[in-house]
Amino acid sequence: MMKMNKEDICFMSAYDMKDAILRQELTSQEITDIIIERIEKINPIINAYCTPTFDLAREMAKKADKAVESGEKLGLLHGIPTSIKDLFLTKDIRTTFGSLIYEHNVPQRDDVAVNRLKNAGIVLLGKTNTPEFGYAGVTHNFIFGKTRNPWKTDRIPGGSTGGGAAAVASGLGPLALGNDGGGSVRIPAGCCGVFGHKTSFGRVPVYPRIELHAESYVHVGPIVRYVRDAALMLDAIKGPHDGDRYSLPEENIKYSDFVFEKPNNLKIGYTIDLGYAKVIDPEVEKNVINSAEKFEELGWTVEKASFKMRKPEIPFYTLYTADYAFDLKPKFKEWEEKIDPELVKLVKAGLSYSVLDVMRAMSQRTKIYEIFYKFFENYDILITPTIAIPPFELGIMFPPKINGKNVSPTAWMPFSFPFNITGHPAASVPCGWSSEGLPIGMQIVGNRFKDLLVLQVSQAFEEIAPWQDLRPKFK
Picture 1: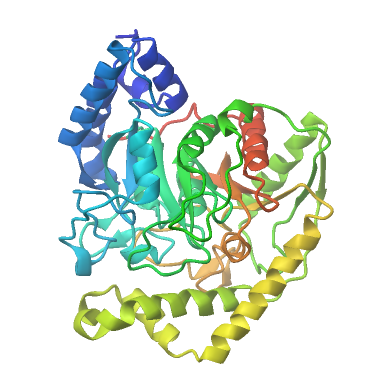
Picture 2 (picture 1 turned 90 degrees about the vertical axis):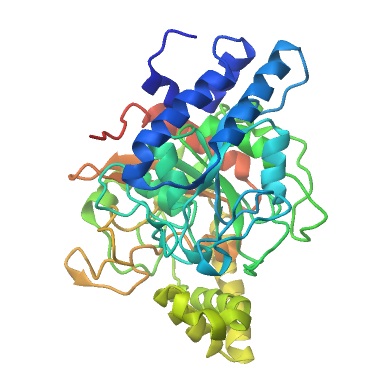
């Protein structure tokens, strides 16, 4: 084994793990056993993993090491311990969607992204916790309970990939697979001080679509500690699939080969309100603006951008709740008493909309897209906060006040869902810390299909202001 302590191995990048495994300086079995040992110690505190698969992980790690020893062709993520959000189908592994309806569900097939990760050689550590059907920006459900923020365990980890983000931040595996229907990769990445990338809509196919309709705004993406690990993971899972009619054609480019390149003459616009957000925490505002201005060190142009946008949460909420109503109405009569009460409210709201309401929301969605189409005619990158405040108290759905002002339920997360409406690629990078020692995230948004550019800008920021040296402390 390499001369590293166990904690250092748990916080290695996937890039470095892969290199160590290929050089046989570390085995996948050694790494996997060390991470499992840490999960067994830390997971009871934060509740990131809901269905561990340690026996399977050890089998996969052993197989990975034999492949290295025998000189076989190896995958992009060969021997790397990885977690999967409990919204993805995993063959022969319990998949509950965070709902009592599926408490004992064991699928007989993998989601496409899961299958591609397996083909790339991952070691599957288990499933991570999610709110019921991924409906919320916090992470709790009636089966597995609450996931906690590793930096301050009385705070939320974000959602709905809260389990995955908390695991990565805590050294419980370097790679987590998440999906994002309104911020569910970026919000937990921001809350937990890690990197999360919501790919362009269709970049990573979604198939099969089980129970969650939402097919026009759900994006798949990685949560990691190092941007280069996201590039490597995306290389393994991106690309078309005939089962997903929205999936994008092959780009014929490996992100991991180009993620370190610095584009020339970028023009970056930043905003702290997107033209409609009412209030923002002063610490978040200060950190995001200061971080955006750091890009000037690379010779890039950075300036404040202005937007005029009226209540984009209304069309999003209409479409979002209508989707949940459509999906859950057939089960509602039997299961209503066992569904999260907040999700019940969403379903009932969705059932109240008419066809004209939904079509009006679709029309408003197009207008929102046009706002960003015009923005990207003049800019290469948009920067916003990831969320409007540092992570708030565990056990509530939203903070009733921000900066002393009464706010609506969506006021703390106004920056994420517009880019599910539009389909643009967007990432959250750690950009600072609150006075209470909680992570602050900055969102980096690119034009349509510009995933590589978002990764390159994120990598450039990581090099200017790295965030990996700090680690959560557990008693």
